[in-house]
Structures are given as C-alpha cells and as structure tokens.
Length: 120
Image (cartoon, rainbow, N blue to C red):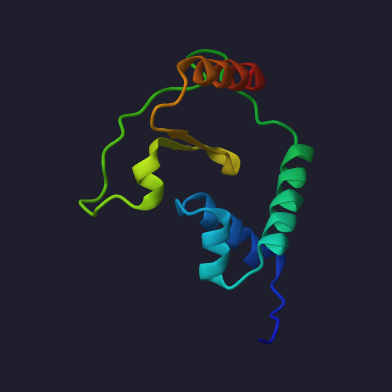
C-alpha cells in the first residue's frame, strides 16, 4: 500500500472527526486507513499547540458549565461499546469520558472533583 502524505489541515480534520465519531482510536484509524501511531502523534501536536494558545476570557457572571438533556439518537441496536458504556461525554478539545455500566460511585465522584479542579 502506498503511503499518502497528509497536510496539517487534513490531520486536524481527522483528529476532529474522531472526537465526534464515537469510535475507539483503533477502529477510527482502521476505517480511515491511517496508523494509530501517526494519529496519536498528530493528536499530541494539536494538544500542545492548544496549550500554548492564550486562554479565552471567561464570562464574569453565570455558571462556567451546564448540563444539557441527552436523547437517544438512534433506534439501532446498541453496539459493543454502547452495551458496556452507560454514558459517554464528549468535551471541547477532544476530551472524551466513557462511563461504564456499574461504575463505582466513589471513583466517579473523584473523577468529577478532578475535572472541576482542572477547570478552575
């Protein structure tokens, strides 16, 4: 198979596409015909670039985060991932948090505390 060189913009589109795909990195890379190692390297490049950018100003009043209603978007049968995942949170910047069925409540509380601390 001939290797194809992609531009930075093409890699950004691939990384952004994975964040909203609901697929594991391995499955997404397989479907896109790219190596997991190259994908991980480009994710790291974009993550470092984001960290170097100045933070956007936050509003002085009002909550910094909110909850939104979640609706099942499909009548399809659950996949292997959805059968073991009770909740999947996709956050800006590519952060994805999959919460499994039967998760330990104290572990989930600790994760929430860490996310709140990181956000402040």
